[in-house]
Image: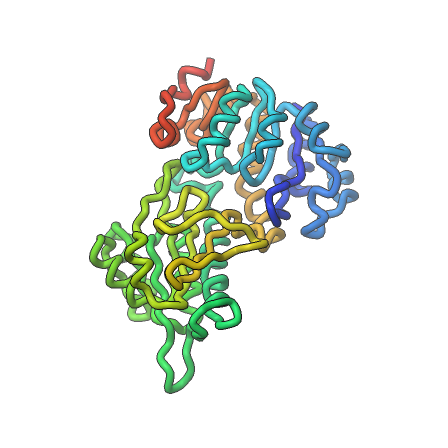
Length: 371
């Protein structure tokens, strides 16, 4: 199969859909890979490295999309990229469709087979292609929050760990999944007071066994969220419903009653965000202020540490890329239910139930298309 890897064009996005090692792995299986010029130069991966791994370097994204059978990316296709997709072409990338009706409509119109990293499941549970970026984003959330608590960034001028004689700050983490756990690991290291909320008592029990009195675990409900958020200096939103829009757990009214100069970091923004006041921002303009509260809602947070993120993501995605290229999408999905769970839009139909429900489309089961 001919696989194409275009350069990412989203604001300040330097991650690459494939590393030279990934190219070499596909070439070893007898496939050809087209790589757009300068694909990895922003993270120190040269065209020479790609060429030596077996890639053909091409001059433009237009050529990649026109020639390739399988397109491998990182972020959701931008409107100009959606317009280049064609019927029967396979798109393998993050999509996050539930809060994005325009992209969904464009993918339906294209007739392409659109596979979302974030809904592919794993044999041992979880979302293994989302996990590495959730790990990165969770850890980054504390860094970003700490930086924007500084007065020069608009925050209240707070050092999270405090100093002798001055109380530390309070970090509240909503959701104890991959994002929340990684945020918590970093938060504990700052010396701040840390509260973690989740609806799974079993998960809270696991965290308590590991971290003991270094964190406070609280069952998540309307009242406990309100109490925690109102006392917080930094709130991390890391709640995920696979493939669906994130629930709005922190209301506009609650934001209005928070400390002035506090910071919220909405890691769920790719799925619409879990703060009612959130809207997506970019690395160029990462924050905005609502009622005196700093909102950091960058939709591609891991893009800021693009080299680490690229290698972590490729470790997770290359196996399914090899399967898709070697078997074709229908056979690969018939043989792997976890990969089949990644099929979101196919041949003009919405094949992921949560996306169909969120955007008002008819849901078509993927099995009906796997002839």
